[in-house]
Image 1 (cartoon, helix red, strand yellow):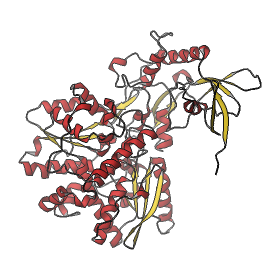
Image 2: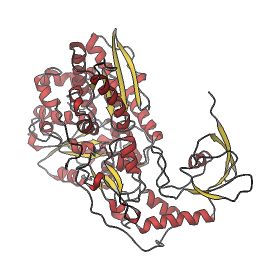
Image 3: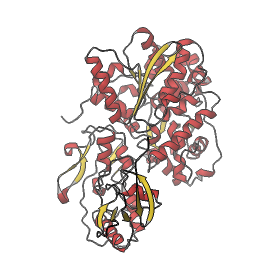
Image 4: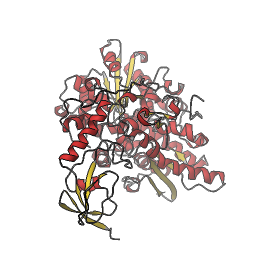
Amino acid sequence: MSVETVKIKIDGIPVEVAAGTTILNAAKLAGVKIPTLCAHPDLEPWGACGICVVKTENQMGVSPRLVRACTTKVIEGFNYITHDPELQSIRKTVVNLILSNHPQECLTCGRNQQCELQRLAEEFCIREVAFPSNVRRVPKDNSTPSIVLDATKCVQCGRCAQVCQQLQGVWALEFIHRGENTRIAPVADSTLNESPCIKCGQCAAHCPVGAIYENDETDKFLAAVKDPELHVAVQMAPAVRVALGEAFGMLPGEIVTGKIYAALRRLGADAIFDTNFSADLTIMEEGSEFVKRLTTGGVLPQLTSCCPAWTNYMEEYYPDMIPNFSTAKSPMMMQGAVTKTYYAEQKGIDPAKIFSVAIMPCTAKKHEIERDDNMHASGYPDVDLVLTTRELARLIKMAGIDFANLADEKADSPIGAYTGAATIFGVTGGVMEAAVRSAYFLVTGEELKDVNIVATRGMDGVKSGVVDIKGTKVRVAIAHGLANVKAVLDEVRALREAGQPQKYDFIEVMACRGGCIAGGGQPYGTDDDLRAKRTAGLYKDDEKCTLRCSHHNPEIKEIYEKYLGAPLSEKSHHLLHTTYEKVKTYKAL
């Protein structure tokens, strides 16, 4: 089917684009950059900032008029003027107005040198703000351990509210009041902790300035490595290895696993592990749980439980589906539990002296470590500290480490080895693919000949299909971005309430679009192009692994032989599984 196109000009340059293309996107195709502050490729444009204003003129001599490029679609035969002295003056005035309402605290702001407003001020050569300061101070909201809302720095672009409402379907953020009193706030002007916030951090990832950011805890890490009494053990999530390099000028998707191990040792860590080890452990537990449900008539569909933001969402919005939820903890929490038990015993270390740190792409992980008593299965906090990818980048820069030129190093044993199945946990569809690779073996006793489950891959918001496990048809679905998840769960709920057979046996859920590779704690600037490159990096990491199925990991076999006994054993249930309960959507009510 042919796509209807229109012929236009951008600053006199002929361009042919698909009908319905905005001026902003048409200009990109012509190699012309139109400045903007509110537009983001993940979100529907709504013209909040007005910086992208351009002139339109057609061939009939009609006087040019001003329109916003992000929301205006191109018209056949029109020429669009994107840059001239008048437009430059208008844009500079708009930026100056925004700056007059913005605190001049760049040097102490977490977005310093990564701020879109700061970049615009530089591009427009603004050396003095043209208007009197009108900054309205609003108290910071640090009610959650995951993210901080500093509404004083808000530029009212609306991105945070859009991503929370449109992509995540959570509605924890909204604009309140009108006119010059308008500001962003948690719903009903509550706190983030009282709101339906699931701590996913997508608001922070999409904010162009320093109005929403992760709760920085780098000082806690520095204090721990300085304490001679503590044995600092660090784990790293799969998605971190294909994103951290961006903070040091490396290409998106470049695999920097060995460099991260080396950097962590230079930072003072005593033991370096990999969350991929416990991703393999998760497959053994969650996969065995699924096989048991499938073969003995357990509650189906089984829902994955690796993503803490999704867990928070389920407990708030779908508590009736708790019986469907896998009881397996996330890989991070499993790793923490075995670090302070199995590893401590193997090395003869007092678990009270182990300081367990996790490097994660996700801000919700900061909340997960204290969500309930199940996160203290070792008798201590299983994970003491979570740092995001961005926080690790700051630590490395602070220490003067030449990250890009570090020689690769290896993780420590006995809980550092991983298979290719574990590394793809970081991308949507990866958990399902890893589970199928081992579920096939667990059901049939035979190895899957082709471990590349291509049907689980891709960026469609919802994917579904049937996996044939030697005659057993397993119906699967994969959803990412919680607004997409809602559609799937509503269907599951409706079928159950109607007494109808379910469509799926196993459903994988990731809260963030693309999965953990685009988590709320990853380097800024994530869009689908970056998601694709980071995703490709994880699949490359999988393909280069000698072992690509979780049940082949020799250190996984060893921990079951020496310590856990078997998947779903009493000991593994105590250390590696959890429980869930209904949570009020509005906590203050």
